[in-house]
Picture 1: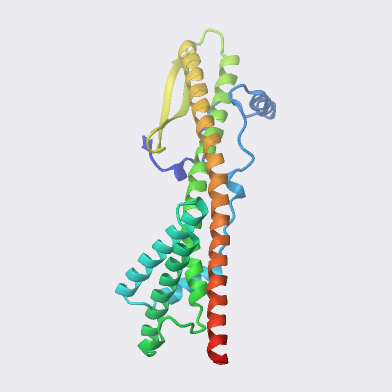
Picture 2: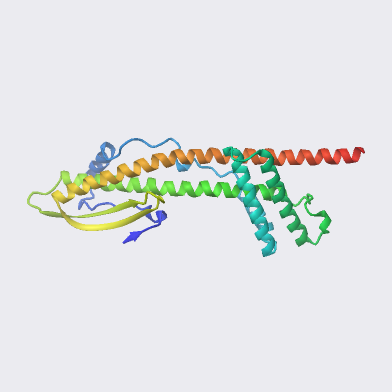
Amino acid sequence: MAINRIEQLRTPTTLPTGDDSQARRSVRLELNTQSSFERGSDSDFDPANFQVGIPEDQRREAEARFATLSESDKTAVDLAVTNARTAVEGVTSGAMSRVDAEGAVTAALGTYSSALYSVQGLPANRAGRSSGNGEVTDIMVRIMSGVEDKTAQFAVDLQGKLNMKADIRTEATELADMLAHWPEGVDKQHFQWTSYDIDPATGRVTATAHAEDLTKDEALALQKNLQSQLDTLSDVTQMQQLDLQQKYQAQQEAMSTLSEILRSMHDTMKNTIANVKAS
């Protein structure tokens, strides 16, 4: 049975031993500790280190205000926010200038403010001005939520692959134990294991569960196959852990860039108001 969702692969499939005594479990634990099936080490940056920066209450409040908009306004705001997010990320990668990003964020804020004022029935000529109802915070949340969600999904995918590695390592340890204690005169034993195939183009993983009676030679061949799968996943996860660290750093830089842009916009508005009052 093929399973294509990583989230469904979190429960290890262990091989039957026929003896679950404490001594037997201790032997398996020792085998697992000393196992040669694990090649290399993972990066220190694992999915558990991913942190969400936008508080959940701010997300809820922003989503509640966004939900009051008309469908056409929602579409317009989403488009403006996507453009702003792309621009902010472009600044962190060096693909766009800060001036362009500030223009995109200003446009997103203006589009959202206009939509809110329309819902609240305020005069059109006030559109784009701060109403004190959290437009700036909402725009920051909507821009950064998209950045965070992409990083979070990557972390979930990576954690799924790390779980697969743990499953394979467990199965390999059980297999090594059964081979080491193969009963005399027994031609075949029953084995259960899961094979994983990774599409090199998409990174998508397909898991297939197996349950077969194997000879000792076939079990040895399976042992080599599990080693190959573990090596492949080790290579993939080591690269992805580095990618996750880079994505997380880019996320932090995007938040810093957006904060600076919003602060600059606020200072510009304050100076404009002060100049008008002084004239």
